[in-house]
Image (cartoon, rainbow, N blue to C red):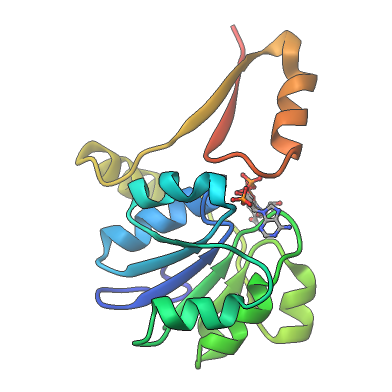
Length: 173
Ligand SMILES: NC(=O)c1ccc[n+]([C@@H]2O[C@H](COP(=O)([O-])OP(=O)(O)OC[C@H]3O[C@@H](n4cnc5c(N)ncnc54)[C@H](OP(=O)(O)O)[C@@H]3O)[C@@H](O)[C@H]2O)c1
């Protein structure tokens, strides 16, 4: 959020909004008072609405759909989709300031479209801030499946399906 300067009153586009990363990005943006439009397949739209985002399907016509949903314009965008969709291209088209378009997935978008590369930055302070949000109910981690360590291969297949919402947890006794 800080890297893309997402704040109160902004409209923020998240590609892959129902995924593990997207789920957190949507909630962090909502917590600071941004309006969030999130791409996801239809099956994940109800989930996105629960998180407070306005869902939209990826694919042909994405730019027009986003513009219809956000006639006020889009201020910043994050690409967190696990495979190539139209998201990165749509993001650079609808956001005026390219410095506010970030990707942590689409290397090609980063290189060719001028989006910013967003790397994860872990620290005790950031964890503390996330726990504070979680404590006041502004952040939740949706666990869609829990697997035992013996079923790690199946857990990987689940993750690699690329279309589930939230996180997959592996239990280590
Ligand atoms: N740079 C970093 O520090 C960093 C850190 C963590 C993750 N990542 C990367 O960030 C990406 C997301 O990670 P994640 O853990 O959130 O993955 P994830 O849980 O699998 O979620 C990815 C989302 O991408 C969407 N998606 C899948 N195929 C798509 C397609 N063809 N077109 C458009 N959307 C598509 C899916 O949405 P629907 O099911 O709704 O279609 C899914 O919810 C991955 O590429 C991962 O490698 C980078």
